Image (cartoon, rainbow, N blue to C red; front, top):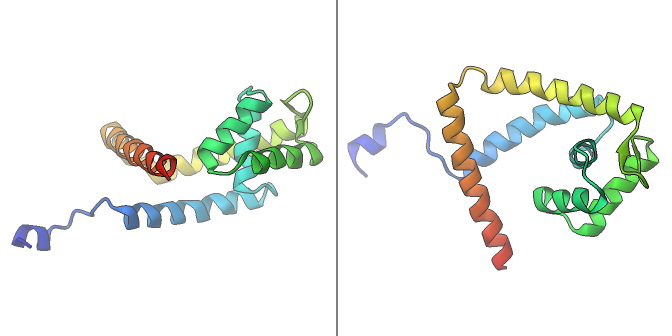
Length: 145
């Protein structure tokens, strides 16, 4: 190891650093979600419906982003319908669902600003590209198995 590498104060981007950041952010996010009564997976399902996706599109988004199977994704939609947050047959968000989703989205926007607000646009772009690259590679690993 060179002296420069040993004394560098720049953090390394590796799986542990990403995992630690993920868990810290998830813990804060889950506190925000606790007020809504939703789980993170349910919030992703609600966002999919709020984005106007049909049933198949919402399921595909959840399978891809949450790494769950189709039965679990369908169960999430059923949970939202049972809670009165979506109209399952029409795949539309109810007034109750809109209110809940809007409140959570606004809370996450505030959290995002508090966490990332002091980073420059360039730093955000670099981080986003790096995470997108790592995600694509991880998805390729999953697909190969």
